[in-house]
Structure formats: C-alpha cells, structure tokens
Image (cartoon, rainbow, N blue to C red; front, side):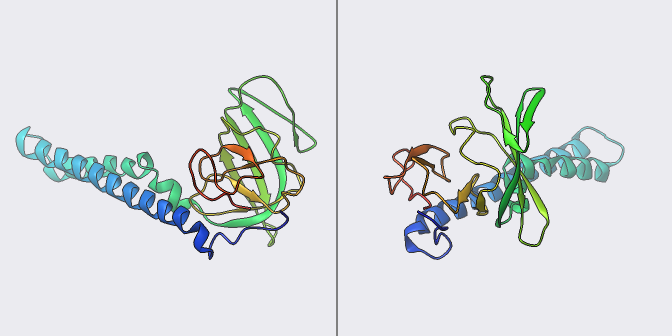
Length: 192
C-alpha cells in the first residue's frame, strides 16, 4: 500500500463524494434558514416594536444571521482545500498545555483535544490543519510523512501505508485493520 488512492476519479469512492455533496447542500440550507430567520426577526422587530430605525434592525439581524455559515459548517467547507505535501511538524494541544519535541509528538496520558499538523506543500508554503482526534491514536501521523488532504474529509491519506498494521478511515476517523477494504463502522471504502 504505497501511493495515494485514486479518490477523485475512482467509481469506488463515488459514494464518499456523493455524501460530501449532500453534506454541503445540507450546510447551505441550514445557513439560509438561519439567515432567513434572523432577517425575519429583524423585520418583526422593526415593524412591531417601534424601534427607531427599522432598516438598522434588519441589517443587524442579517449580520447576526451570517453566523449560520459558521454554525452549519459551511465556512469550514468553503475554506477547506485539497492539499498535498509533507508533514513538517505535529503539535498536540491538551487543554492549556501543548507538548512537542523535535517536531515529533510526545505520548502522554492526558486526553488530546486537538492536534495541529503543519504540512509543507511542494511550492514551499505551509498549511496548518487543526483536527481533534478522539478515536485515532495520536502517533499515526509522523513528521516526514507524505500526505494528501481532500476537501470535505477531516483527515489525511498517507502515501506510504506499507508499515501500518491499522489505517484511518478518512470519513469517520475510525482506526481499522489494513486488511479491510470498507470501514466496518461507516461502510465507506477506505482510502488506500
């Protein structure tokens, strides 16, 4: 299992791409509903409460409604991009503590709330990915791993998975055996 999957073109991965499109449509609809609700409150406020400037009330509630873009996850999808590169640093963050040593993660017993992964792209720029690992062992990714990130998925696909006994499902973040072709938890094809 050396090399990246053909996620973008293979029909085997079409169900994952379809699920991500449905998730995007759902986020857009939730954002629109929140925005419409806030503007509706602004209209009601301006027409029924005697607020001095009705337009201001509508504009204020419209601006507040833009928070729906963040709440629905649409902002995360809009700012997410495909990326390929090499991990140059991994940083664990637990509550108010973070521990790194020589760019490698330090194993410790406290619960990990967030991992920051710095990926250097081929053009030399560095992209930071923050992710929470609840189910995934925090030593799966290592500095020097070549990885690829696909828009909409939370985790990276490693190029070299030949030494791994277990692999991460990029859809549900479960840690499963490399013998599995489909994740036993979410039933989507594993990127390998």
